[in-house]
Image (cartoon, rainbow over all chains, first blue to last red; front, side, top):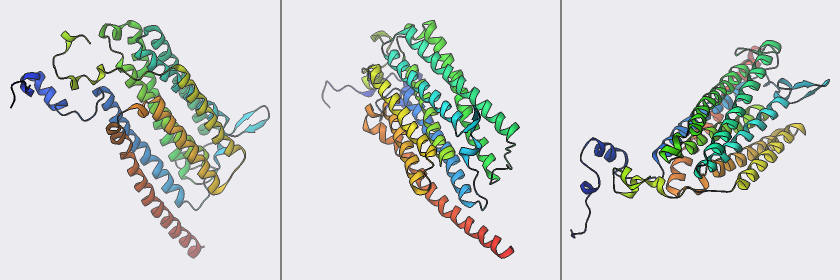
Length: 228
Length: 121
């Protein structure tokens, strides 16, 4: 070995800190921060959960002898004397995509360490999430109390429709609700200046990943559940 | 992060020190508009009452285009290194195997049920 070789022991101390360092990053495959890598890995696992739900929905929908309920009829909204198919869903999609847009801008502002701008944009995003969940509550109560849709049956067609609808949109709504709490927490911390003191806005990007994923899942629910 | 706060000397412990990919708001606004247009197309498929394979094909294409824009631009995957991109984006492809198996299974259950209904009237 040459004299100018720097050994691992020189760089990383042999104590508890070193133990954590050795176990977590002595060989680093991904050149991103751990918070970001871990959020992505969590999102991959969540992809499998929603992927399994939607695949199960496909499998069951293939098996029904009774026709599957016509979604543009079930989810029509009565406005001004005529039924507009999927109107509420279109508005919900609009709101969720918009909140994804404001989140992307919040992440960019976070890179630039613009405290107020980042905080306000995250709060706007969370507000979009609240709007989305509110409209989902309206949709659910309409389906439950007016249309009489139940997890075990409905008047529009195959009995299995309700079970899959409530499970898939419910689990997505739960993700949106958790996201609202998460984003509000981050926004408050941003505005309080916590990340200025740390000189590190990485957490905003990580929270952004979660929120964009919620939007991503909605894209597939919108396509496969409402439109197919 | 200042030098004093760093317990380790090796730079690979601090990949975050590399400058983050910054993009102008205009890029996000263009993608935003594009997502609206694509959602409008999906909605249009329903509104125009396109049915059958063409409907499924169009709805699926628009969904995957939107997903690509969200993951690529909003989630910055387009600017990540290939090692990371593959580690995250390849595993979900295994879901295709699940979809394949379940579609065979679903078709078989439908066949058996139809047979039962025919035989029992």
